[in-house]
Length: 581
Image (cartoon, rainbow, N blue to C red; front, side, top):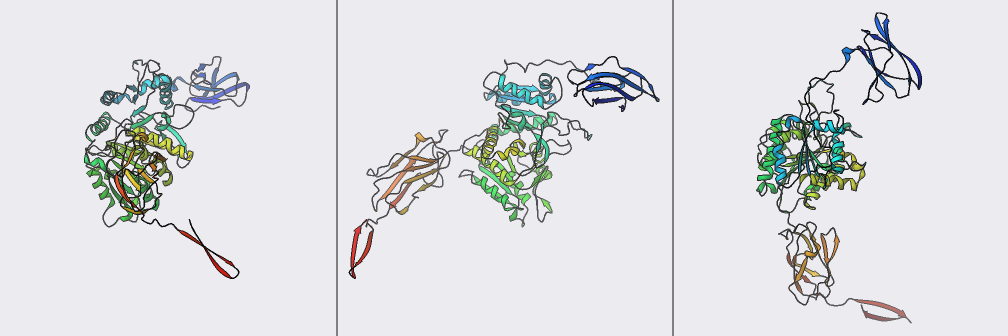
């Protein structure tokens, strides 16, 4: 073997006794270590050095196993610490701990995040603020590795005092190039895990940290990240989160939703309309579909709608790290970093969801923010949170995930952001395990404990059969009522103004939303008025909707029984036979 720059790491060609010679050292002072177990290196004694061809050669003999590894080097190649400081021991590997809400933060932001931790504590959450250095110390022997984060979270989930932690917030930006071989100067404050994907290859996944129970890829905790590079950035994002939760609920703009669709494929408009179908009656849906432009500029329209305020902004279309797709014969971009920097929506922050590629990729060089990071960093507005992928995907996969998210918010009343995103992943994966890659790469930039500023989601009647003022209804027709969301079965009361009308026991046909009420005894030509009352699973009573809670219909007046005529021919004579049926 030949050393390079006075050092060489090498193995053995086969099991058994070997004589080794390593040449090319500039000094006779050469040390040899057995590093077969990297955690417990052993210095090898008995090696000899001698001059050889203007350099020095190391010789030794070993009876080695096949996996044996050695390193030979001069003292000049020893690695020395950049700095040394006294470590304050932590005790996170103790079953005496307990928390609902864990913040894992870089030391630079430790003081800054205390405000958020204290606020969550006032909401009744047990909180723990953990320095990333302490995670390395206790769960990876002080070695920088993302695996330490999952080891810590798995321990907390399985061993801390019950109940197990629910929320995890990572505070600090990450960098995919761990060793910064590109010399960008980017600091990996809180690393993310590298995962292999079919469509992109290697990308980052915070979801990996939260998959702590079993060997599956599904998250067991709700996880988000503030991808910040300074205490000032961290403070600004925390201030936005706190202001949103304390001031936004009840504001008129929280009944607005903005839907944006690229014009390259009709599929994008379809995805947007799928989201629209899940937004309750009474919201204002503002659509910016790029195929409708020009005239005018979709970017300007998007900025104007965001500045007016929207609870959600959803984009379906093409995308890359720092912008949405192209328009106007591919001469301009629908939205990019400069457009986000120009927003003026302070105090009216949306949650941004996207059905596109790469907008959530937060682990690039420090000089280049992703679109999701730009929304979060915008000091005069931007977004309170962004849910976006760190890799590639396809529209039909995206729409399954987004449908599950908006159903979680409006059908299941999951108004804590992390609960909605996590439930969406579980639902989408259950529907199709082929969506596992999206489960891994969709990332929440924001606090998973954020409470959405959505208006009270009271139920309403979407449709009735018969409809209001309907006529000529069959005498044996049942009554059917479609509610906007699941209803508490025991709360439903259907009544009639006609005491002669008998209403049978209602039956649910699907998802605690569609109710059928058999109505034996409807009378010909009679008009009936029905009223329904009900509450949802949260106890909210019915509100006004597209169909009334009190409605009337008229049964057909036709009470003449149909007749069937049979003609029987015999002996060349017609013999009519009439019977009532």
